[in-house]
Every structure is written in C-alpha cells, then in structure tokens.
Length: 253
Ligand code: PEP
Image 1 (cartoon, rainbow, N blue to C red):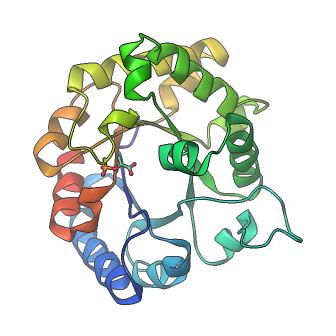
Image 2 (image 1 turned 60 degrees about the vertical axis):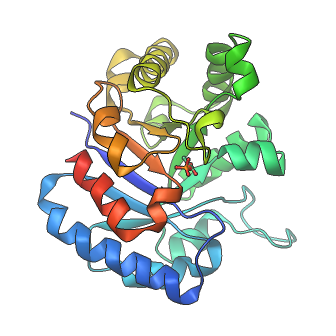
Image 3 (image 1 turned 120 degrees about the vertical axis):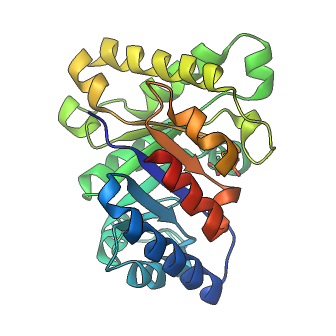
C-alpha cells in the first residue's frame, strides 16, 4: 500500500520571514492531520532550507531541496552537495524539475548524475518527468516520458530505485492554470508504472510512488488523487498559501 505524498515546491519565492511563517503554518496544520497517514514535504529555496527545517522540526513535515549538485566537494562555485543538504535537515530533493530542464537547460545525463548522488548521500530524490505541449500534440508524450524515466534512473539497481519518487508533471500544466484531466493523468501514471515493471519488476513498480504535478489546487486535488495510480501531488503555486496547501493535504487523506 503506497502512502500518499504531498510536496510543495516554493520555487524562487518567499523571503526569510515568509518562508518560516509558511512552514510554521503548514507544520501546525499537518500535525492535526498527522494521524491520517500522509507524507508531507516543503521545498523552499536553498537559503531558507535551514530555517524551514527548524520551523517544521517537531512536526511530520519533511524538507526537500529544489536542486543538488552531483560532486562531493571542491571547486564548484555556487553549487550545493548531498551531504550539505543532509547536514541541514533535508530528507528529499527534486531532480529534473521542468524549469531546470527547460529554463536552466539540464540534460537527462546531468539529472541522472544528480539523482545518483542524492541517493548515495542518503537523500530521497523526486524525479520530475513530463512532456511539453508541442510533444503532446505530436503524440510524443510516451516517448518523452520513457526517456526521462529510463535516463533519469540509468545505472540504479532496484534497491536504489526504491528510494525514488516520480512526479509526472506535464509541462503545459505547470503554472498555467491548465490541469491534466484525472483521466489523462491516470493514463500516464499507469504507463509509468508499467514501464517501471518492465525495467525492474512488478513488485517494485507497485511500491514506487508517482505524484502528479501541474496546477493542482484544493478544488481538483481530491479527484486527481482518487485515481488508482496517482499517489499524491507535487504542488507549485498553491503551496505558497497555507490554507490551500493544507486543503490539498486534507484531500490526500
Ligand atoms: C511545480 O512547480 O512542480 C508545479 C506543478 O507548479 P504549479 O502547481 O504551480 O503548476
């Protein structure tokens, strides 16, 4: 039985005060929902990770970084490694978010190195995959998602893959107000689970959580998560409002 998982990606938003306020509000609200068996994580910008980790420390809310670098240490100006993230209380890290793929230019190979380093460093990666609108219109959705999953997980044995959560995030639905219909999302989640079964085995495929992301709001979260292969959600915009994010966590129960 896969435990529902709700993660909030704050992207490049908040400041030193509002990040702690938001984290404190989410932690308080989540404590009330804690008995209901949902994993919750927030993904603040790097500079607020430590303060947010402190704010949620006595709750069931985990902290995730939005990115990582794959080298262990050295002359990599501006980069942050797995042990630094562990050291300040991170549990999860996003790998391959569409904004890093399409705005920053990260390749599948780089994402694979980051994900591999995250696992080696004791973090739980959330691998984001998903097609552009033009790729969906050209009927390339399955091909693109297959490439993201296979290249993202390349070289990992089943034990390491069991540390990974996958987030299916169609790029055309991120921050646009457009959401995949629950049926469209379920089709892709089922497709990814079958792909994992082919790559590894059906037991592992049944254990891996697959989240949906793309304009998730309190009003559409419950229906999306009612689908059999949608194990939770990765939320952007709506995770910046305490009440909306708590309503989405509530929907996961
Ligand atoms: C995201 O950042 O991963 C995301 C899904 O954003 P939004 O919910 O705003 O579409």
